Amino acid sequence: MKNFNIFNPVKIIFGWGVIKESGKEAFYLGKKALIITGKNSAKKTGILEKLIKLLKENMVDSVVFSDITPNPKSDEVDEAAEIGIKEKCDFVIGLGGGSVMDAAKGAAIVLKSGGNLWDYVALPGKKAKQIDEVAPIMLIPTLAATGSEGNPAAVFTNSKTQQKTAIYNPLKLYPKVSIVDPSLTLTVPPKQTAEGIIDIIMHVLEEYLTGDTDCDLQDRISEGIILTCIENAQKVIQNPEDKKARTNISLASTVALHGLPNAGRAGAWVVHPIEHAISGIYDNIAHGSGIAAILPSYLRFLGKVKPEKVKQLSIRVFNADEYSDETELIEVCAKSFEDFIEMIGLKNNLKDSGIEKNFLGKIADKVVEVSGIPSIIKNKENLLKILNNAFESKY
Image (cartoon, rainbow, N blue to C red; front, top):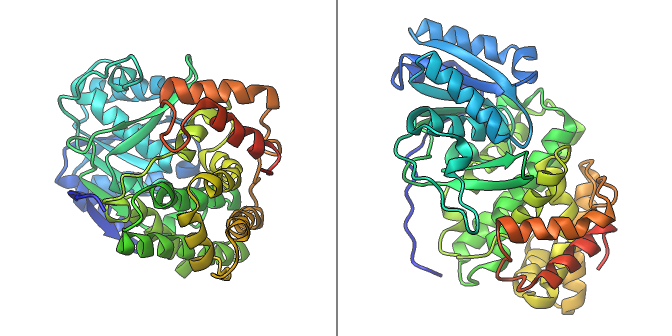
């Protein structure tokens, strides 16, 4: 285990019905909020109207930007920030799923530091502009998925270059307060719920699978998050209004990237950069769906190059016989995830997800262009092997 520091200054208010606290908390952040949300759901469900009313009751004015799309685009964020500047907003509220919350973080950067959002993105050969100041941020997730409400990262897409990558800044980009109310997830459709669940699982799997192997406590926390997601996914698929299941999934989402589960591991993130390349090209593919399509092939690849944690996962999470041979343990893990992905209504391969096989090379090129080759993958040949075997879910 590597030495580590944990610093998480986010005030998290968690629980059923805590949306009522948002007005009181906003009062301490500023006088006028730039509310960022998506095009439809926050309006249809009445959550946006309720939030505006709660702000008014606490003497906070607001202006709304409701044009954020999935895989948030940097130019959308620039447009939101421009409105915030014009309206003299002094803080930002993100009301929605991961795309909206990330967009709120991006707008908070541009609102105070100026320029365009893509100026602050670092790429191989492209230095990021320094973030001088960020407007205070409040996040209100309406989907359990990214954990953006508790971390200092945000992912954006440049639609012109088809590049998708993250801004990570632990000094500037943590929200001041996050209102995590599981009741707001009740109206999320089954497919989006499932995509959120697989994203939560992958947030702890990335470093669990590739990082230091002597992180016993972190392993158990990560396995607990995975099991919580699997067990409650089954319940919420059967009954979307299951209050307990929704609450457990929301908490798993917040905890997964809150700090401790991945602390001290120093592992490689592999599936996320591959998925970012996919949805950077295929904007109609949601982040969770892309992860689901890649994961089984990636597990089979790891079973050949770094099998220890795949075997451990197979035994501890999927109850495989610890005395089984290595090949069988790897396959139990990969097949169990394939079955789980199907059970929650997602596709477990790229072909069924709508990816064209002749685009696999372009996807690999985008991974290299934006993120470089992850250390565990070693070369582009292995990256293409994962993609090709993910195409029809076989290795």
